Image 1: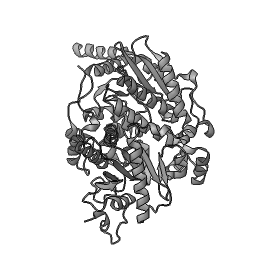
Image 2: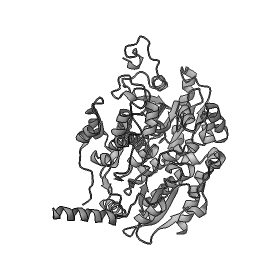
Image 3: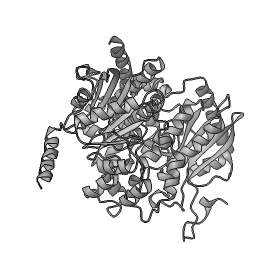
Image 4: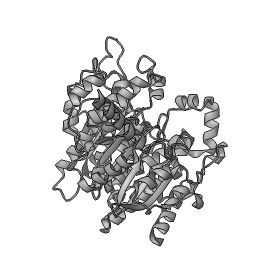
Length: 294
Length: 282
């Protein structure tokens, strides 16, 4: 009894000692991940690169358009963290916020090609395209995707989906193109948000207010259990920071997940669309993550 | 046997062929390619090009993906079709062009799709098209119908050059017009009026052309029933885009180079300029 009590106590202590990553804003997240003292922001709020389209619709801009570009170091190696701020327009991708991500990745491609690799980390926290900038958000996402595919050949591109917004829309494809993905169980990763599916396909297809169901389908635990992400971490700054560093130390994977066409087509062929659910998928897709924390 | 022309399940009326199928067959002939992803070769500007289209699939196992949408199978099959071309040309000094015929209403919206990772299936298609481009294949998108949102990302938006028919029914957008009106609580009329001042929100192909993302908007072509002259026009435009691609870079930088982009994507250009400046100043 006393043994169980003390281990409960230890677990409780561990939870208290944790520093939540989810509770941090984009800037603080980037700072927390980089080596201490190395954070330096590029195109920051004082540069005032704002959306040219929001004011035309009576919406107040944010001076960084919701994306933080943080230059710094990881384990002493040059690194850049691209952090999306969910508190501004739900982390949606507009012309400027999208261009900040695409331009940084394009610049890092040039650096890598010149023999100066920089470690890229993307903190996804986004519902996808910003509706008020529709086609320019979509165009920027295509450019982000192009840059990830090109950059991934030189250095691992590490994506993080911490929550609570999650990662949706075209940016879920961008996440899936990363060399490695880290999630928390609070995070969600899907192409279409639950509300969109309910609206397009009806409540009998998906009840968007059933949070338990939603997380069982697209939450971090399910994604990790079915090999769709590489690492599941607690909502803890230290764990996340360690995990990011371990992945860079591991180097580029032999094959990106999005290149495993025969593997995923064969799995899909074995799915019975009439009966498939989260548990059945775990059985079918149950495989060791391509990389696990030691 | 052309199964898209077979009667709809249980009905007497035949399903009219989709724009994707019309253009695939007009340019490549009736090949043995099967729905939902058609892939076949065609003569284009004196060389063989690979044409790829997504078409309705009445026999589709996933019920939310039987239309001309990009669902789980479509995403992976697109990736497979594109990768097959890359592999076939692995040792070839000149890589054959790949033409994506774009007529996709949307991605598939469904519970099973999300569970089984439609985001990854679509990413695989993005990856394959981008990899073809990086391997030196001229990748051209020809928009003959709707080019919507995530479906366009998966099938067409990684192209070196994007061409579109300026015909009724062609459109590029992040969200369907009706859904966007619902979400923004506007009438369709108010939404259209907004598009006149906020160009990226407009639904017409003419407006999209002002963003500098198209390399050519082809007018005067019948998108539903192309004549021989229409086909000649389109083949010539594709040939010119292929030649232009071979003379340029293998990335998407051409999209920021036009006068239209300098006007209406000025912020995209400015972000890149200022970032390079700050990076170098470090």
